Length: 107
Image (cartoon, rainbow, N blue to C red; front, top):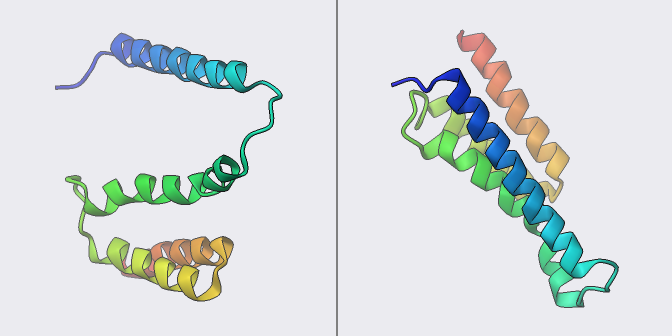
């Protein structure tokens, strides 16, 4: 069942308003107050936690390409490069390079 175009736009607008209100309330509560060191340390790991949360459904989800050997292989290579080099950019470049390079070769 395909959603109507108006339903999609309503969802986008409502989610945009909710996201804005969440961010506004967070900034309004904290303002210019200094944050504790433990919270700042935890916030540094937010991007590291978000990236796997975005990628994992594509690898393990129920879509047409879930569990695809090319995707799993690229993800494992990205993980290995990230762990060995401790460099996020090298890990991402390796994953993208393998995924699109081998994907182009295989068709």
